[in-house]
Image (cartoon, rainbow, N blue to C red):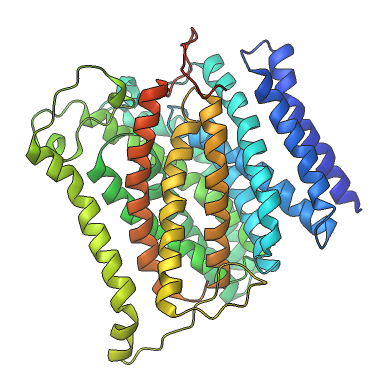
Length: 460
């Protein structure tokens, strides 16, 4: 065992046992299960790593995955709340850890047994992080409803953003990194740095708007932002994997994605603030009320048949386009004289000769379920029900690992991008629908409440 693996083990044990400190020292209302589950799972993950092909490689992957998912639950909650500083810091940690995790996965050729530490990492990391995020929200009074923030009113917005120290820190970091790349890196590396910065800004800007949209209830808002987000993520991920995810791109990627995510949250809050003040307009007809937890209200007005058809229209359009691409993409490419690159099975170690259409269908299913479970898991992580959140981590981990493995093994094949965008967007819509039903049953809300609310079964 190397010194690095030893330090990773110490760090993981400290993270997994921090729930006890939160409960018994800081006196936060944290359940005993939320303290025990991460600690037991972390010990299990370390034992599992001893049985894989290389212990040090496995511990590097497991440690990066845990930090990634702690960061993910932080950014998932803080991007929904009005705090630029907390959001920017959590974005830097989560995106940086994601880059490290995917770098290891790429170097390991998507080693399929890494699925086990990845699954353990998502449950233990998100469970530990959720308790701390709730503590911070309660201590600093962070709220999810941007419509109540007067700093987003016209005339106040520029002042709001210019007074944020993290905005200037991130901008300065990017400027320094570009300056360094111009003078100390070769022309090819400089090009890669600039492309990664541009894609990182775009990916997390539209991705954050889409993630906030998924926590609301507007199908058209989710669809329009989802298509843009899917395109930006696919292009960024394919570019990074095709370049081998070198470490000189780590800082440009981390900084640009943190800035893009923070600015996306800021713009999303302005959109939500504006939506509550526009009545009886095309906006309200198509996008509706973008405040959180509107589906939990009783005695809601019954929707007309036309309104229901308008809400379901995105499902029909996206499904039709996705099916067309799966069936006709290969014949279309051959008709135009373009080369058709063979697709690989998502996991290494499996030598299977499947027809291209079957692999494209498998890719569609992977992206569909990944985005569906992302919506469910992200919404669950933003609610005040830790049991609901822990259960959703399991299918999300399976789908997420499958998606990343698929991209890692097929990173040079750009014709998977359209199907990943369409299937992912459709998955987000169905994930939102299922989430709303569960949240209504559990009465699971976004903000940490001062007094406990009695919840039905699925104890946390």
